[in-house]
Length: 175
Image (tube, rainbow, N blue to C red; front, side):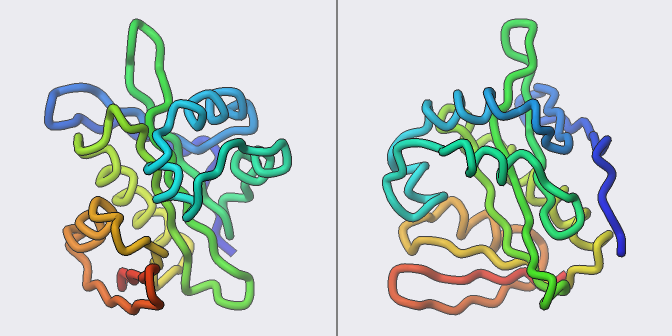
């Protein structure tokens, strides 16, 4: 079975000329992930978790940062801010062992950096990783009011199928 290297790293240039580093998440990212989660607006948290989540528990932080890069891939996007790299987004892809050709994705970009192409860059890297792992479909569970994620998926350049279950839709990219 294929595995994405824990050393995964890529550099992208955003439309505004800034350099974006996209790399594999590490257990040492726990504190940064928690700090940036606390800065998210209630709407961004709701778009990601589907409810107004207040905290990330230690168990959740372990799940989010200690991934196998086979069934669970997580990437961090970092920007240089004040001479330090600061995480500004996280994207992940998770599949079930019983259904390795389908993977659920989630992308969260901090509020102040939304709309700058960071989510698009993360999605392209998640697509690349999924293909390397033999995934054929990327599924995103999306609240009906999450227009940014709808646009991101629809402008991915890949065929998109959608289904709805009330306030939540599943958008599936066929790789």
